[in-house]
Length: 184
Image (cartoon, rainbow, N blue to C red; front, side, top):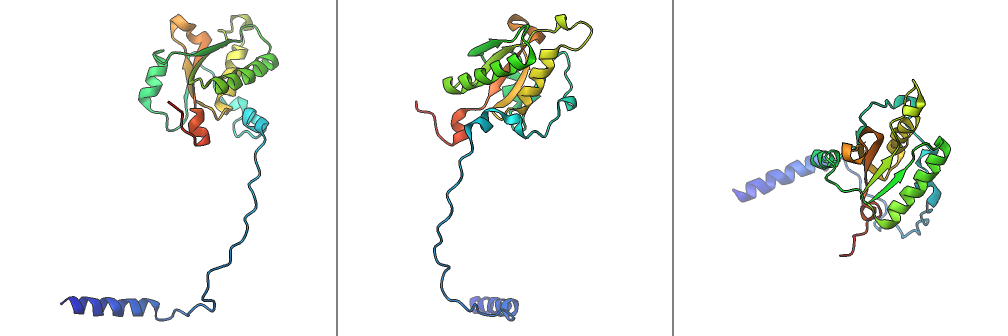
């Protein structure tokens, strides 16, 4: 019975490849030197808005801010919202002009990356000085954080840490971004 299976399998195979033609070359392709990868400039990693797919007008800023990239676990986001992930570093942008605040944020994130910070707090204020308009810095921070690859999630802080005038920011593990493991 085993031979019948093998014969029928063999016949099926011959039918399937019956019209195939043999290759003219019977050797593997010779080794070719691949071009070296071109390193990306460091400035491009720090300034992600050179090429943006998100316009500032597309981002709605509500009183309570909440954003998470796809893949961030709901449990981790809930811990961030409850303030249970302790911010290791903070920056206060109260009363700054947008250009200065953005430059300060770039330096702050570079410092976070160097210190391997996982959670940070950014104080942007509630915008009471903006009059009838929306809070300017809050809107800008909401937009800028969405553009950064190293930001996994952010949400408005708890009342004890500034409420809707501040955000907790969950940052990407720098070891995972580069493929290295942290030393213990």
